[in-house]
Length: 153
Image 1 (cartoon, rainbow, N blue to C red):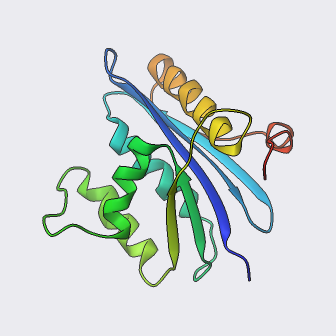
Image 2 (cartoon, rainbow, N blue to C red):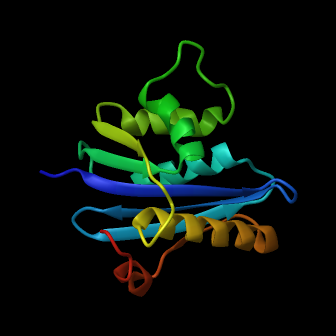
């Protein structure tokens, strides 16, 4: 069975401290969600987006993840835990460790330039950050007609 492919991106506005995340996952079907929050950090948004992407993924399914460099660096600590693991966002890291236990997955740096799934996720993460600034925490599915237009799936 082929690995499910996941493109994930986070966004953060340091001036207003709001952030957003988005993912597009291609496997049996194409799925995407976006969310955001106030008073947050970009690493927290990357972790929250990754957790959301794993929620309905069948157990044992392999996963190929691509993320922009800043987000990939955050997720890399989950793939290969450092000798001195990060202590920030322990709640999300613990939940992700449980969901990733026994799952084979890879991580690559995805360039969010050009019409690619990485660019699509980055644009939705930016939009989610702005929505969170105005309305607070949320999670919404990305509409299927929008997902159908993603190039490179």
